[in-house]
Every structure is written in C-alpha cells, then in structure tokens.
Image (cartoon, rainbow over all chains, first blue to last red):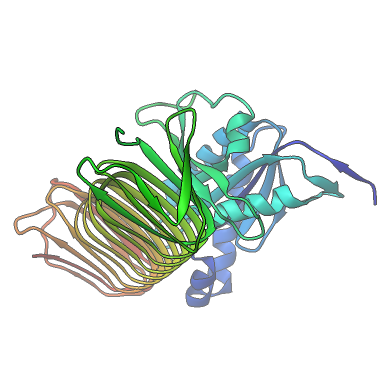
Length: 175
Length: 222
C-alpha cells in the first residue's frame, strides 16, 4: 500500500464516561449518544477537514489548517454543551496536535497521531488542549485564547510536552 | 536576590517539595537551576528528591511522570502535572493539577482551582472557584465560589458560597451540594436513575445545575 504524509492538525475527541454510561444505560442508548456526537463533529469540520475514523467512544479528525482546527474544536464543544443533559451526556474532551502523520489508505498513523490521543487524555470534559506545535502553526483565530498548562509527561513520549488550554474569550463571538 | 517570578521543574521522576516563605531567597537542594531569558528559574534534579525554598507568591510549574509533589506556604499560580503520585498544595493564588492517578489535596486558593484526575480523590478546602474532573474517585470542595465538577463514578460533595454558579455532571455516584442558609439559586436538577432530595427554594441568587445519569442528588442549606 502506498504511504505518503500529510501535514496539519490531528484531533481526538471522546465522550467522558462513555464506558460507564454504556454499562448503565445499555448499548442502544450508547449508540444513540455516539451518533449524536459524530453528527456534531462532522458538522463542525471545515470543508478541507475530515473524520479519519471512529474509535468507539470518540473520533479522530484531520484538519490541514491550525486556526480552522481550533475553530472547529471550539464549535464542537459549544454544540455538545448546548444539548448535553443527563439523558445525553455529551461531555467531550478534545486533544489537538500539529504534525506530519503517515497516510495509510484513509487512515493516519504515527507518533503525531499517538501524541494527539495522549493530549486528549489530559483534558477535562468540555476542555480543549493543544500542543505547542498547534499554537506555533499559525495565528490563533479571533477571540480564541491559549493558556499554557505547563510541561506534561504523557505515556510513550520521553520528553515533557508543552500543552495549552484553548478557549473562547468571554464575550467574544465567532469571527 | 529578588524573588523569581516563576520556577519550573520538569523531571521524569522525582519527589518535589516546595516551601514558600516571606522574602525567602531561592534555595534548591537535590538539584541545580538556571535562569532563562524571560526570568524563569528552571530546576534540574540531581537526586530523586528536590527541595525548593522560595519567596511567597512565586509561580510554580511542575511536570513529572511519577513522584509526590508537596508545597507549603503561599505560592502564586501553581501548575502540576504528574502521571502518578499525590499532589498537596498548601496555599496558592490559583492551581491547575493534572494526574492520571493519585490523591490531590488543595488547601487554600484565592482564585480558580482546576483538577483533572483519572482515579483518585480530590479535596479542596477553600477556593475562589473549582473546575474538577475525576474519572473514578471522590471529589470534595469544602468552601468554594463557582463550581464545575464532573465524575464518571464516585461521590461529589460541594459546599458553595451564596450566589455561586454550581454545575455538576456525573454518570454514577452520590452528589451532595450544600449552600448557606437562605440561599435560593436558579435550580435545575436531573437524576435519570437516582433520587433527588432538594430542601432549597428556587430563586435567582446564583445557579445550581446538577445532572446525573444514575446517582442520587441531595441539595440542602448548611
């Protein structure tokens, strides 16, 4: 199989507590929640972004432009927060990393993909974390802030990773 | 020497102890340090335990893979990330702690406290506001302003101040929220598979939004 590379933002988003929710509410409720989530993710992507694959309780996306990826992640969080409830606990954690993964068919593989997954593990529900590579890849979208949360050691990576918490400035609207 | 604005400890495995005292000069035992161009002090460990003495109000950033982190005295903004190991913060202006497993104890924070914990227990004595997520474990905020708490399983206990905005999300586990006597927040309580006991009248003084999938919810005055 031909293997190339792409450069851009790899994003992982998953539903916090999905395993427990499935155990308590059953497979049918879990499937409905997942479909709701995947629909929101798909709608939030820019035209050149794509869902790479579904991962059980989350999705892996690729967006070439860093600013567009940040905007998309914020839109995704806002959309989930707007409809989240005890019946639909769409409490989402998002991790973003900018890199150059290998392309294998429709899939992406490599260290940059693994790192994006580890970054998502560090996030609070409702929180977006991004590596310094995302922040350095271009200007932040209007109204978007990045606050450093410090060096973080993540599984499978020797050196500490600089992570930033991404959020919309209070009172600012989508540019 | 004037107090360093920010101390950064990035060490794969080490026990880190920090003591903040009024106007104390910087002393590092168990490691060396250097000053970066922006004035930050970067500490490198030479042993499995680092002990730092610094001036009150100093900002502290610690990143470790394993090892206990403990501070005494009043620091500025404290950020700690560790894969495993307990974290104890005595007093700080604001706190951000992230750990995969281990116990987090926060004494007093004037500003926001943000904690992410995979499995473990989070206890916050007093904070301007709290934002806590624990996958499995107990969360207790004993005196806080605004609060946002999320757990997958485990008990949540929040004692909020009058007029605060309190938001709790849980899949399972008991939720107890207490408010000062006379409080009457805008209330939205939902427990899909659990019991709700609410003895607080609804009003417009702050807000209380609790949603659980299967845990019980108790709201009361204290």
